[in-house]
Length: 417
Image 1 (cartoon, helix red, strand yellow):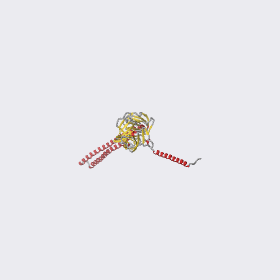
Image 2 (cartoon, helix red, strand yellow):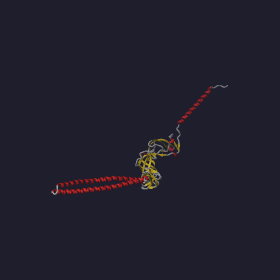
Image 3 (cartoon, one colour):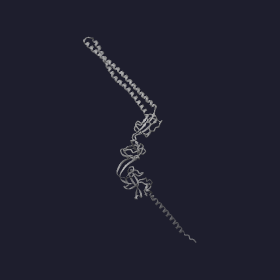
Image 4 (cartoon, helix red, strand yellow):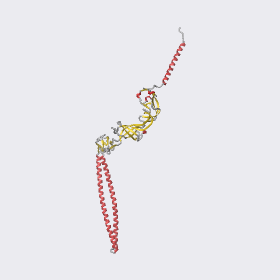
């Protein structure tokens, strides 16, 4: 017969509860411990990163920009008047002289206007000549009249003097002497008036001729203008150089002011580069520079810095001081480097990727013989094209990773193999 043992059942239940509580506690402790663990450090191949050593010594600050060679002397040729392109005589790339005809245009109305203006100028000249002859004839008539009056006056004066002598001797009546004297005085007054008229006549002739001369000059100026406009239908280069651009076609109608061609002097070039606005604040005219044309490097100097910012860049003109290498031509892509200053004794390293200069950053510093790298705070200073000054955070001889480390932002340590 079985005997009931309730104490054994209670013991088994108690044991199960204790085991369950222990298992749950162990699971909680394990979960808590795992949550406190830091993620494992990633591993990176040494060949896939860029490592540089911190150095101390002289450092040259430079900025770099891409651009192109541009002629210093460029002549844009525009249409003086409306016209139709009849012939193109020179193609782009051809050397030209000052009087080389690039293309010919036609405008019949302009030709007629030039002929009409020349005809009006000739008519004005004829009128000037006719007026001059007429005034000269009138002048001669006035001189003849004045001479006649003067002669009459002299005769009357002599007669009056003779009558005065005769009157004193009692040979003639006094009234006769008075009459001759009055006649002489009248002719003297008329002679004075004629002399004044002659003097005024000179000024009058000069004034009338000046008016007509101004008309002649005006007509001649109009004729020269019309003729120069007609001559401008034969478009000339204007300078010795190379025809670079000819954006017109035969039969095309060109409006006044329309661009016909561009001529440049190929031997006088400058480099126009674009420098990022964040690096252009220290660029000043007169600084030394160099221009890489891919076929050689040419010494240069900063001649102009554009005060405006366009698309995040500042335009800088570099005047070339050395001989141009072979293949240098307008619009050739070049790489310009400007020397800002030379620092005598500073701590510097290669410029990190995606790191802001002149401010704090965090870089991976190698340790344990290069087996691992630890992220450390670093204060950077003045920057150049490929180097940057280290203000604090690193020592001479230490190695740091300069390549992009954004993939390890969640880690402060990486293993290197």
